[in-house]
Image (cartoon, rainbow, N blue to C red; front, side):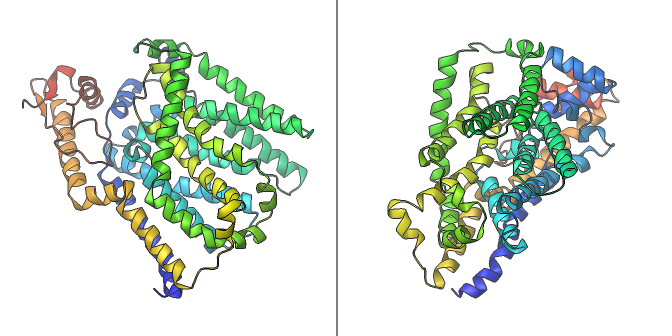
Length: 468
């Protein structure tokens, strides 16, 4: 393979690799909590809604604000806004990652190089995330967790020291305090991550006798937001729905096991390994170009190796603590987005040590980068979520899902104007792997159908599952 042609084609083929994920958004439909929140919030003011959720459901003071006026309330054509949200969230994920990269590299890379790096990051994340459907295509889950991760990437970028006059730095700092408080109020996962990160940052600054007034104020803001989340009376109401909660050692043990499980899965991913191979010939180039690279190499390897386990454990612990089980994997999506840069941090450190150090000095032949790019493209599209997305689209599962969901929506909407009408929900026999669906092995649960009926104005007893 001619490396010059490979370098020219690679960006275009990476962009095409994102296309299936964008295409899937055209088949997305609201489900479950989407309808529940839209029906429950009807007629309430923002204050009534916020205080009601805090008292009777959860303490997520930031994400709850985005549930009352979700896309189901924007217009009569609810699908237009609903299907726009995955595209917006992917664009924001890309933009926030680009912002963080530019801040870290201090514009040492060209725009094209930054674009390629962030595009690879986005595709890796889309490929590896444990629950793609709830990660981007289910509004309730995506806004709660993915938006929190987007804000956290921005927050980290704003923490990178930069030049500018005192007023600009002060405004940037105040903006970052506001972002920090918002991140904490998105969900329990980001709350715990922010607490751990800012406690660690504060300890690091004090150990090096640096001026830490700004860090202390940020930590205080994060702590106050966390208390507002943790002390919400609604947490007890929601927790009462589950048995065997608040078991410390059980929660810690299961979180550790899940860390081993997910890290092992990600490390064995062909897409991640292929992108790791792509990085090898770039190591020496970046080492001499990016400011602060030498300081990065002073990171103790044991800390870098421990970070992924702490990260995944922190994203699973709240679920085990509050519910006694890991009921969904959308929380692990938060770990996944930060695992990817931590993986490359470990790769950078180990390329300076032992046998891997000799690999870093290796000068490949001109054909090798082309083959590595081809391998990465194949892995990104034919393994993990890349394979699932292409299979759902080309195999017809996404289209079949769309037909069934559209028929349900039309029938429930019609039943709202006819109290005598009965709606029998057609089951999803082969639900797609990449869109949110709670059927297949199990029948659709009653509360999900009831929420949909309430949203459209029908009675709960008008809807039910089609008899087998």
